[in-house]
Each structure stands twice: as C-alpha cells, then as structure tokens.
Length: 322
Image (cartoon, rainbow, N blue to C red; front, side, top):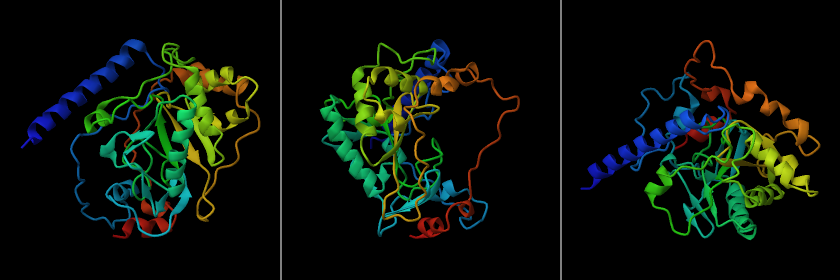
C-alpha cells in the first residue's frame, strides 16, 4: 500500500507551495489585484460527503453542483449567463492531447460545451503555429457547470476556460506535476508592467491567435498585460477589442466563447465597446486604489453563494437528475 507515502508527499508539496506563495507576496509586494491565490488540490481523489438535506431551499447551489461528477446526458445546452447558469450535455477534454495538457486534475473542471472543446483543440493548433509549444489548460467547468466551491464566479455554462501563460513542457506531466506546479506570474512587482524577464512577444502572439477566433466573445487578462499587448500590436489592432483587463489573470488568460446557436437559453454578453481598449481606457487599472487597495474596515463575512432558486429554472433539473 502506497497511500501513506503519497499523502505525506502531498502534504509536503502543499506546504511548500503555500510557503512559496507567502514568500512571493511578502518579498515582492505584488499588486493585490494581480495574483490568483487559489491553492493546488490533492494527489488523491477527494469525495465530498453527502449533504444532510440536499432539498433544503437554503443549500448553496455550489454544494449541489460540486457533487455531480458526471455530465447530464443529452443534447448540449448552455443555460443562463456565464456567472449564473449551468450546462447539459457537457464533454470532457482529454487530460493529454497532442498540443495541450490539463492541470489541477483534482478539481474535475475539464468539462465544457462541445463548442469549447472544439475551440481548445483548434486554438492549440493555431498556438503551435504562433510559436507556442502547447497549451496548459486550467479551469474550464464542472460536469454540469453551475457555481463552484472555489475560485470563480463565472465558468458556469461551459463556455469559459483558463489557459496558462506557461507553455506545455516536452513531456507528459505526472499527476503530481499537474497538481503542484504553479503558473508563473507575468506581471512586475509594481503591477504597472509585465515582468520583462518573463514576457515575450510570443505571449502576445498567443493571445492574438485566440482573440482572432470568431467564436471568442472576450479574453480577460491583467491590465499590465493588456497594456503591453497594446504597445506590441502595431497597426494590426482589431483583435485587441476582445482583450479586456480584469482582476487577477497575471498567470493565465481567460477565454470566453459566444453563446452557441443551439442554446436558446444562453445569455450573451453585450458586444465589446468600440476601439481597442488601450491608452486612457486603461487608466483606472493603474490608480493607487486599484493597485494597492486598502483592507476593508470590517472583514467580509462568509459568502455562501446563490441558492438553486437564483439560477435559471432548468438548472434544477440539470443538477437533480441522476
């Protein structure tokens, strides 16, 4: 039996990862809005305990969706909004492909609408042509979408995916590497620019290749990364409109697809504003209050998230089905 050594290794690795995160935050003084602080998971499969009363109206929806380990069979449907919905007919992205590998396997979040699966495979090939060795895929969605226990407000309808700014290595990653290896923060300690020792024009070419896909509605990146891409784009700037600044997203970029035509209950976002989103459009993100926010006077209470009643009515059927 090897479970005890594996558990011990997982604990040591988690402690090491936590120490590294603390050291980075303490010594480099990264801007508070920059870093994804979601910790790695475990090397062993974790099964959530059953809920005492899963039909109680006050049960957070995230507790129900997190316990569904398989998709709802049937036609693919994206239901509701990106941050308020669910999905049926999801497909699982294989954890290893010719031009991608999935990270953080313990989360079971490598599921998506078939349109998202097709996009990732298509984009992985285009990224290779842009000089990228292969994609490392972070969170997509849970098997039935819906709110998650940690890490995201969106990613609920199977049309969002996180893609690391680190390229795929030349070997198939072990489960341990996928779980414990961290994504690299591409933003300088000031929060105002990219880290010149890490960022390359190939990173810009990678995001450009994604943004030029007609199925993409938005791409979210850190504001410092958006600023850098604005300076590198030259005269070919149309793709920049889809690239939007948002908190976090220093180690990865977040792609979001348009609603598929066969999902009438999917709620599309408004079109992106006119212009490339560069110059003064980025000023807000570099104000002192955003780069160095003051801690709240009162600590925020626990956030339980929405109940099932707050989601589209069809999501009840999705999550309650066997």
